[in-house]
Each structure stands twice: as C-alpha cells, then as structure tokens.
Length: 320
Image (cartoon, rainbow, N blue to C red; front, top):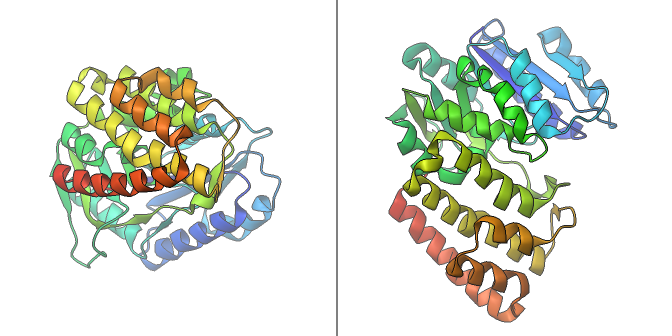
C-alpha cells in the first residue's frame, strides 16, 4: 500500500461525497485501487454521512464512525494510527483536488521517494509533464510558512508521522495536535518537494467555525511551533508569526467586523488570546485597531494591508 488517504469528517456529507467521487474516479481510471487506501473517520455525524459512504464501500472505502465526538484533533490521530500506507495524506472533506492529482502523487512516490510533499493551492494549472521542486525542510517551511497548517497540502512519509502520535496527544483540545506531528516530520525530512503547479483547492470559508478562532490561530498554533524543533530558529518563528498576523488574524478580524459572513466562531475574548504571543508594540497597535478602530478608517487600513501582503509574498517568494 503506497498511500493512505485519511479523511476526517463531521456533518458535511455533501462535501464528503463530492471529494470521494473525485478520489475513486481517479483510483479507477488510473488503476490505483490496489495501491491506495481511503479511510474515513466519522466523528459521530448526525447527518446522512453513514448513508452517503455506502456506495463507496464496494470500492474499498474503509469507514468508521466514532461512538461520540472525540474532537477533530483526536480524530486525526486515530486516522494516523489506522493508516497502512507508506505515505499519509490528510485532506479536508470540503477541499478538492485536480482531476489527476492522485496519479501525480503516486508518480512522485515511485520516482522520488520523498519524505515530505507540499501540494500547492495556488499557481499554474497542472500540465501532463509537471514535476516538483526539491527543497530543504527549512526552505519548505520558510516559503510556505503558515500554509503548512493547511492539512490538505501535505503528503508525508508514514513512519515520520506514526512515531510522533503519542507525544502529540499533549496538544489535544487545541486543534493543533496534527500540526505538531507535521512540523516534527518536516524537521526530520531529508527530501522535501513542493509541487510546481496547483494541485489542491481549499474549501469554502462558509464551513469555517465552531471553535475559538483566536485561541487556535494566535495561541495554540504558535505554541506548537515554539515547542517544535523549529522553535529555536528566530528567522522561522518571526516569519511565521508575522505571516499569521498579516495573512490570517487581521483579515479574518476585518471580515468578522465588517460582514460576519461565513464565520461561526465561538464566543471568546480576542484581546487576551492575541496578547499571549502578539504583544510587541507593532502587532498590538495593528490588532487593537482591527478589533476596536473606526470602521471607515479600518477599511482604508485594510486596503493598505492587502498591498503589503502582496508585496511581502512576492519579496519572500512565498508558496500557498
């Protein structure tokens, strides 16, 4: 078994069905059913997920439903434990992939025997002869930065994941236990690849929510990074924290304040969460204004921020 596609799901049967259709269409078309296993771990959904998966069981889908909702991060770890493939891929159930992404991954497994593969979510459309860029672990993290948290973009050698599962349990409850595994796996990777073309597509922002946004993305993820082997590298940490503030924390805060469209975050105190790791004067002045500043002036500030983000990505040659 070359690849385990590990799919966590919870009450998103329509999205799950769409992704499973794409996956099994590719597995059949490219004769990969014997080389790839597909596992779905249902976190006690109350929708029709159990019915939706029935049509894929004859094709080899391995479906398990938890007796209770054990939380997303514990569900991820459960999938890692069950995987039998040489490599593990953890796509989100509401994300999507190109029509030939699976044979592309298998080709790289066969020809490159990589440790860590990053699948781009932006870039040129795929071509029949597309390849991947070989980089070091630090180069991959510096160029992709906070987007290494996008689990659908990572294909990782299974033994690099499985040896980290028990230690990652200390992060359960913070939604980032899987990311502690990803970072340690990346650090221990000798051969890393970044796809040259766009391979995966992120799901709709309307599916985001049901958790404490600021606690997860300003506290939990930063603490996971700081406790990882990369945590002592000031260059990496500074890049990551700045990108997190500019690319995610501030833009989402702006959207919540101005539209509140598509986000269902649990009630929390953003200030106390942001102060934990983003308490220098520059960061504090920015997020304070985004939280409480005049909305008309904030719109002007946000336009300027978007220009800064674009320039920063070009300057740092960042990959998404």
